[in-house]
Image 1 (cartoon, rainbow, N blue to C red):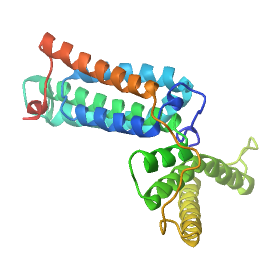
Image 2: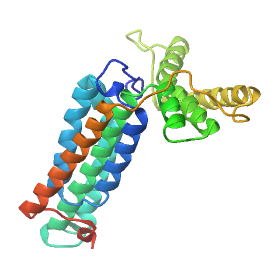
Image 3: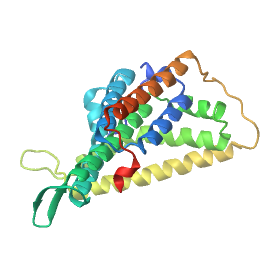
Image 4: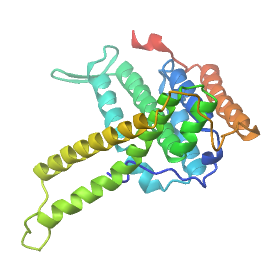
Length: 266
């Protein structure tokens, strides 16, 4: 659990970029992926995003893999649903099970889309400090103080969930009965109990944060920014580089005749 909720590495190259710029790029790339339904361009973008996350955030491959697990599970499910249910040219059939060429193509593209958005989201979380994100959204995105401080508080709570999970599991191990080898017994019931405890802890912490912000009159008057987060030439080069790479991949896929859009769904 703690590995799924990676903490921001403020020393990585991507961490030095403006959080608003990174968030806008994540939105633009995710929006562009909605119109790509061929496996070639989507898997190419995923491979480039994976390399970019490893190099730009300096995240450990094991941590990236563990954080990837929910997206891998989702992509695996989407792939097989399309493979077994989408009509088209039948490649293999046994009873009511049928595999079509269109199902493989669309399923692979949708799976790659989920993985690409996932790896970019992981890179965003791992390279973005909550305070800088709040200040940048308030300064550049013109978000009200209530909204930007709420984003910061939620981000902080997300970073603490991993530590809370470890603490809860350790407390359960202290009270748990031991097996024949002297190790605490763990099962589905203890895992469910830990998840419920984590939920209640997060809700109580969020309530305390909300009361604290409200008691300080947040949003009643204009707020100044203690440490402004500027947009520099490095951010411009990041935008140019990401858009250029994405445009090149799409252009090459179109030139090769493999590019497909939403029409592949019908």
